[in-house]
Length: 327
Ligand SMILES: *Cc1c(COP(=O)(O)O)cnc(C)c1O
Ligand code: SF4
Image (cartoon, rainbow, N blue to C red; front, top):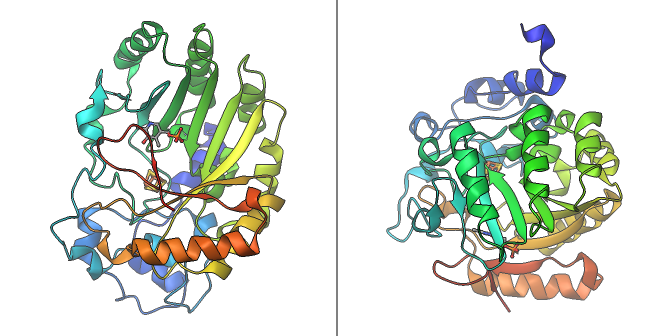
């Protein structure tokens, strides 16, 4: 059977899920992880992502994003399961309608990579993700509300859907008269670039309404030649490429690293969009950077980069009508 799977699905299945195997591959002490943290939130790392890590470097910025460690077991009270109030905002079991004109559709709970800092790491996906039944209900909700102009496919990673299922969904959404744009929030072009198939590009580029793809890349080391080639192939007339990053202590919390990221994104055909302050999800406290330091860092970026390469520094706050700009 697997012979008939698209090659990206084979790459997905071949990733590291055992921390010891990953550490051995990187020539690091195989005990440098926490089994308990792994049990709380499993490890998932595509081979192509691991290949971008430096061998023998325990504080590699890519490794730190994916390795389960004991720090995750520290639980300050202000770090919670649903830090941004998504659950309260869910309608029809799979739609988050918090902001005017935009709805977020939870397509799948799965991701190709499990980022340790993920704000949805404790999210009860099984109850909310889209299935065929819910898809009909979601489409009715969107059809019935003409104030909605943009549908955001999110997750998990929406690009884990097969080309066929994605195409069917996108065609239904784009046939709704008041939907003017479709947005896809995905980390797959960065962490599993074989997902960017010729067919995917064709589907997105041929839709009757524009597609905005918002990638998630946190460090220039994630932009390998393979990733750059995939992103440049996605750069089509109907597709706008943007990036969002999360500010992560010890990983990208300095101006040179963020400057290098913005500059490399530009040569990859992608413009920086948002730089998020960490959402306070349980298990992620060790990644937090103070807001004061974040503001200083952002000011430094404004000094060294052209304006179009400076991402907006934002934070998601429960109950707000938009992301909060930090200045
Ligand atoms: C971030 C987010 C959006 C999109 O916000 P933009 O500022 O348009 O990028 C939409 N809905 C939800 C629930 C979000 O969290
Ligand atoms: S790819 Fe995005 S949704 Fe998936 S684990 Fe990483 S941060 Fe979370």
